[in-house]
Image 1 (tube, rainbow, N blue to C red):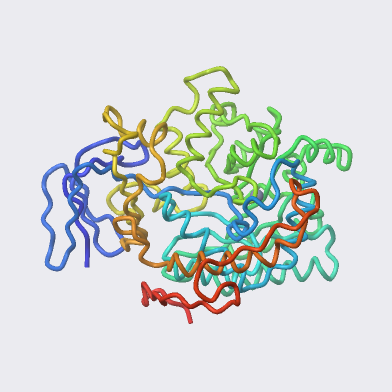
Image 2 (cartoon, helix red, strand yellow):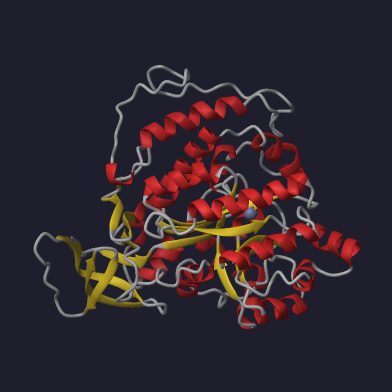
Length: 468
Ligand SMILES: [Zn+2]
């Protein structure tokens, strides 16, 4: 089985060179990219590329998927207060079932905005893994370790991490891979970090963490340990294997030297950093120094979106604004950060580009929308003008997850119902804008209301991917 895209404008290779080509997809692989017409073999689907742009699937290199459940639950607060007063108390109540439905909502949102690969840090990875398997998406998942000491709880966190590796790593045709995720230097102590690093080395998986997100985190680290978070992790030997480091907002020139020397991949999360008032990462300085800088949304409770098209636009605009320099992060660089660079950071170098031999993770966009016409430069149109409505088709491993704007693996109505039902459990907690008053309950909007029984039509859209 295969697909042929005929006469389509495509952003090819890591350089995103625009050409009008035919693309033949064989199974899960981009078999041929040709400027001459390609024939569809027997049983192949042919798609006419007129008016479309093909780009590599977008890569969201840092998120916390089920946090979509707390989107808008607490805004306009600094990180420490937001986390300790509003997010962590709610997260402590989350059940496996709720995480499953939250993950599916996040996956649906990501597919609709053209993402095909993401790196996640959360808990209940059995539920998240099941949602990812069913959705057809590609993911690097990790269990977020929070343990100041290597006590009973610390050991349990590491055991859970090892469970995720032995049960979920390299499953569903390699679509799910696992990383080890000590949350940060302020939530995990030295002994915990050392055991986490050992685990990552034993199973040859990357480390996924947060580094230098806020000025306070760095100041506290100097007070506690006399060095910056980057220097501390270097001292602990944590940076000598593959590391995916979210944020790196407050890094010194010496930190940047270490990140470069150790080949650490930084994940820039500009919208979350802006909304939490944490600052702006020195992306231009890191890139000039040769650091691999990918892009991520962070969780939808601090963004409040998982839309990578909005993120890459914001990354480009924020860099220009903050540095008073319109040359920074040009459109192609923004798209590259959100595709090939992200894929490399996540250890999936066979994705993130449209190239013969790569995995067929491809996104098609309508480039003849009102807001993108006239068309001089399709990549400019995508980065500076297009909304996520432009995304028409999304493919992972040669399988459509969205075809002509219809999701083929996720039952959107069911997911909306379940998420509205779940949110009612968290409304009795205070909201910063309501002065401690409860938020009214919502009707789930489906016959049967919020009693937990779904009465809508059951749409088993892709039985091949169903996990029972
Ligand atoms: Zn994060």
